[in-house]
Structure formats: structure tokens, C-alpha cells
Image 1: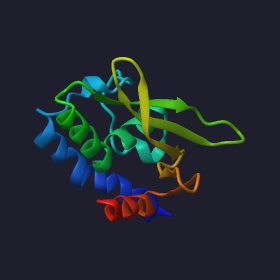
Image 2: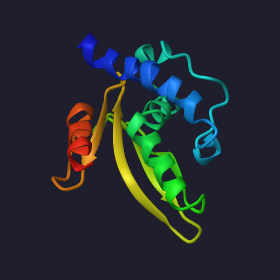
Image 3: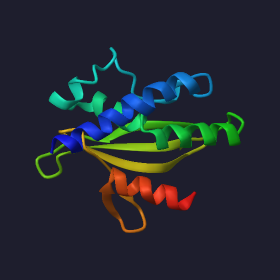
Image 4: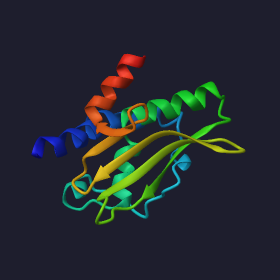
Length: 146
């Protein structure tokens, strides 16, 4: 169980943080609609998952950042990518739902759906099968499509 929690956190630290520094000039965080009042302590996400932490876990995924940069570059800045926490945990569905979408001038188009458990485990929606799959399985699907 510990491995499941640590892999996403380590990927954020090893890929997401240096990646943010490298690509910061290309992608402005203002496209993210959820603005935290204070920075997140990474250790906090393993103890207490909240809306802000769930958002940051998804927004900092390398695939999400890559997609955001690609769309912004191809549209020459006309289309921005944003994310929003679109659902909170309930007794029947104990997940935070995070939607990543294109924020176009006249409409929004969803790119990815994710759900984050209270322990910080991220799952992505496989729209073809209409079911949530592990982050590792989703990443493999993306690699096969490229």
C-alpha cells in the first residue's frame, strides 16, 4: 500500500518540480482555476487529502503538463488548458474528481477526467471502456498512442 502512495508523489518530485522550472516560461499557472491560498507541503498529501492537494496532484502530472504545453503551442496561445475539482468525496463515491479541459473562447472541451482517493491514489478515466484505470495503465495507453 505504501508503494501506491509514494510512486505518484515521487514522480511529482522527480519529474513535475524540475519540469515546472524548465517549462515555466511556456505555461502560466494562471490557467489553473483552483488557486491555493498557500503552497502545499508534499508530505501533507499522504496524511490529509483535500481539494487543493487533489488538484495539485493531477495538475502536476507530466502528461497533463505536456498536453497543456502542446495545445498552447499548437494554438499559438489561443487555447489554454485548465483544470478544476469537479466533484468532492461522498459516502457512496469517496473520490475527488478533477477535470482537465481546453478553455476556449466560446466553449470548454474536456481532455481528461481523473479521480483521486483520500490516500492520494490517482486514477484516470478510460473513455473507451468508460471505467477508471490505474495511473500506470493510463500512462501506458498514452505511450502506445504516441
